[in-house]
Image (tube, rainbow, N blue to C red; front, top):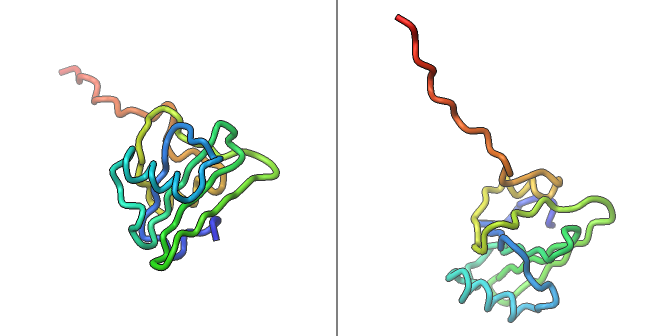
Length: 120
């Protein structure tokens, strides 16, 4: 379920670190009060990562209750953005990249170089 993005309307990453000992209510509280988002938004997946990057938790409202997802990798780690303390919406393609261990946010993005002046 977590490897593909089927059925998700939106996907949000809780950037930074989250205490993964929290349950459904604790994660829903973070979504509502820290990020000012609605945890009851149907088919919206909220993802959280602790200090160890080899495990994540997901919270999903299915209309009749929450689904709490937990994934621990046997080998490798998730490349999780740690700098900001905000919820960041990602595309389904970025989600697939994250599940493959790729960077969603480049640490050193390529910046455009303006055209060099031309000699006349």
